[in-house]
Image (cartoon, rainbow, N blue to C red; front, side, top):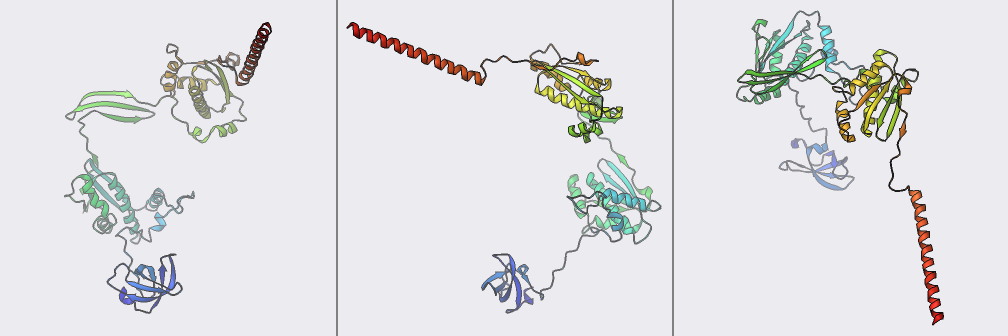
Length: 440
């Protein structure tokens, strides 16, 4: 672009010291200098400098052509009313965000009466995955279906090391997707990196188009040949079962199932997540029922109470919160027993949580060893009357040294006593010395 400039032309150039544009004139041009081919003279600064073309502003310079986006990368204009759906809750850290699931819901609602659809199959090492998407009937809006199908297919391809993509549907959309996964398309990078990820760089990613849906391969998952021991988890209802299986040459030799359900009381109720301690006390200030507990330890006994929700559905929150508070108290002291009084449902919940198989079993077992009495396990009792709870007290530990004020006074007495004995000793010595002189 140096050929558009001439010596003596006036333009704006960046001054290196302050980084701002200043009025200048062209003092010289040297096309051999590729980095800074133009020499400018700053009128106000009265200085000369060699600058690059991106540091000058001049209307005679033609604008550089903007780089075009890959094919299928930009969202079509007609697709914006379906796919750009803003969330109702404003996101401060990400203003203007349009979640994908909202766009998918709006698109499916708009295309629920459509009869045409685009179907695809993704072949990979572990089997074949199939999915489909309804197509909007209007030709102008079919770009929306093609763009959304490309986004969904790209997400499915990234989840598994796919080897090929097979399309079936309207020819216009199939050709659009084929071009997106080829050189110069929006998903060229995914098509190039998939063979390397599979470990077969010599076999490129293929995109094929078939006319009939029956020509698509069926969806299936190939069974893995387990050559070593592994764990398999099966979630059914509330409990979780873990099966241990040891295989050799693809055949199972030893198989064992164990119950891997969560400990009782370990799951947090949904309401307890919202209520912290302060919010809980504020929410239960009008409740009359309460749960009381006494925690006995070697230096005394602690007593606490907490109001309880009246409804059975919300009593789980009270039970969980009391369990957390008791856990913190046990950590701070070497507790020997826990005595509960209150609603039977909450008391039984806490008794089971602090027993074998409960959420706090890990805490109860080593507590006896920490006290030095492994033969006396941690006990949890339930009483009916408040008078059955032991009173709160703190046993005074034996002190080997006196308290600082007493120790100070005691030291003063000792010093006074020592000085008195010293004075008496000196007085006796003086009297004996004077008596010896008199006798002499």
